[in-house]
View 1 (cartoon, rainbow, N blue to C red):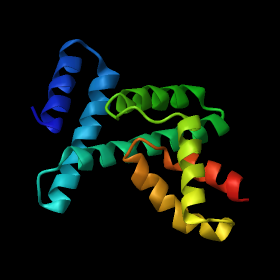
View 2 (view 1 turned 90 degrees about the vertical axis):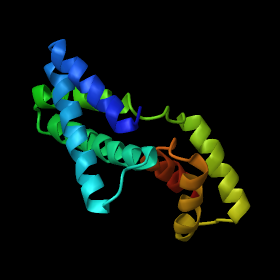
View 3 (view 1 turned 120 degrees about the vertical axis):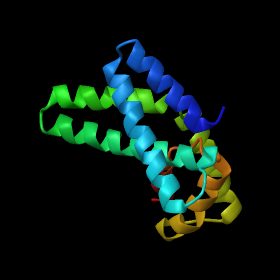
Length: 147
């Protein structure tokens, strides 16, 4: 069963069991995946699908932050619910300690000494993490260590 077929099946299951929030979130995800497929004019690989999900997760996190700042807890809760549904399709992310270990090792390997070297270190960190490193967390750690 392909990645997209699995999501479709779960969406139909959610619709049948009356889970409107989950069904709606998965419907949105499927639409984004279809858009990506149409734009690239090829069938999406699982990696491509994960990239789309990561984008949606990032958007939800930003929305939660904005809604909390605007004192709109009901909207923030809705986004958090969607966020948890979307995150369930992502591989397990590395812990902050694991990310710190990788960042330290790469700083030593590349000989990075200051903020000007972030552009040299960050791509290696993301490549070594192979999709299981949160870029924002890695960047914060990197700035902390080089700053």
